[in-house]
Length: 343
Figure 1 (cartoon, rainbow, N blue to C red):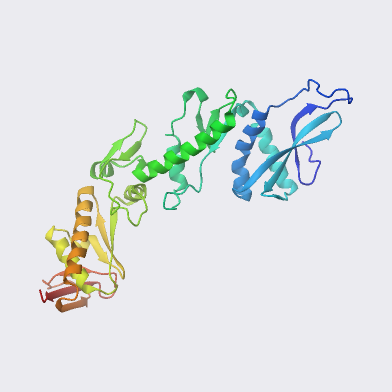
Figure 2: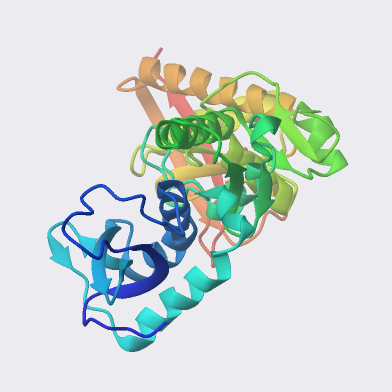
């Protein structure tokens, strides 16, 4: 289709133009429906949003040529018309030709990229695409997954626009709820067994059913983020923020971790402002979180009552029997610690 106007794209859709003024309300012949125009917008939106941004919209206008009135397309961002090159216009024309088939019985619910959690963390697009196949939509709409999202047939629904908006909102809300709960695709047997995951159906979807404890995923943002890390590395990391250069708290925390037979040297490392603790199962992770809480309370109790505090950094643990922990100091990674209080 030739481009006739600088800022518009002419489509193959038209209706016959009345030949005389007497034909005020003629039976016009349309080769399209309003539903088809709505549908094509949904199919070419992914390309437009990727090219120009999510705020850009499609505006349809009527343009007359000879005895027909054609539907033309403009792209707008607010009240500003997008200036497109001829190449970009041809790309949109090619998309219209591609989808101007029986496919236009369907509208596209595209993958909701840039979906945010309740605390404004971005949900990974790869996870969204994995979960989209598990979104439940009435089979009467003949849904199917394609490379752009979820296609559904609404051409027989009178209020198709309202239903489209409702489905879009409901699907986004459902995905956010899944992300907050903890869903992953194709988890390893080790992760399933050690982290209380149960299958949802028989297509590789797993749901976390353990206690919802924010201490587990504090720095990850959600239980799903924590589980995704587990799937990649086989273990998770519990973080405990530290008071700046406070060796008293480090001493108490190290001592309490030793009481539960936790290997402080091989499974944790003190950094400048936090302690990273490696955990490979849910039971241990909860226990570690409890120890951290207990240690914070103990430290608040003895703060100001420390009579003697000694710590010394060393390059090796050889021949040492005092309480010791590991830091991220490359030259002297090991610290011995002694503490005496006035209590």
